[in-house]
Image (tube, rainbow, N blue to C red; front, side, top):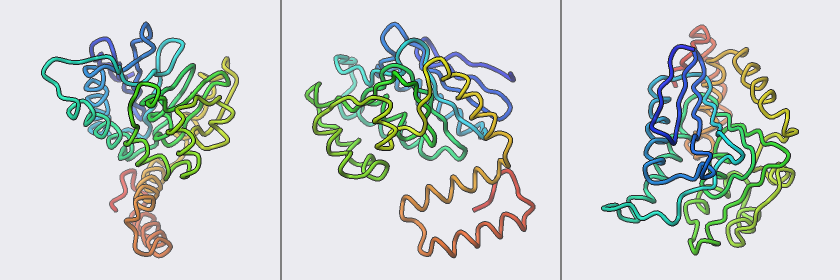
Length: 247
């Protein structure tokens, strides 16, 4: 371990040579994210961007991954718009991380917690995990979720989830595309570790190039995706497979 920084009591970030791990660390409240905790998460994500590891692992202490935003909090001097803006910042930082993000989910992942899970590149969930976008149950309209979720799980699944706010089992989450893998609860840590080890055994530049291409493809930024794929792969190979491809 090269170093570890503690961000107050809500978020912990640890760095290894090629892996940064962000841990939600307020288990007494189900890792519910207050305004302060959201800022700490954003700071941690920005630190990961600056460090540029191959992998980002997002995990949580305790029985639950994350119960979402603290809907009852009213921080003094902070408008609702300012608080909501933090969601956009955190989402963008997670989605634009140039390496591979791995999310490890146990217990409940609700609201923003499910957002972290579904927006990570690969999400491993315990069999007993429960996910869902429960904002409507709090009298809120999850407009941010309605913007990004259809591109990840499709419009029909999105409508069912965001209009009803219903919670789904890990098995259903896997079926509709909210998570990538479901494993027995006791095997969650080992599965996440094996996944990370397997990714680190590959070519780091290949992972970063694939992430960059996939992100731009999803955003509709490629005029001719097949031709762009060939050109970028040829350029990377000709450059000697650099760890940080120049796109």
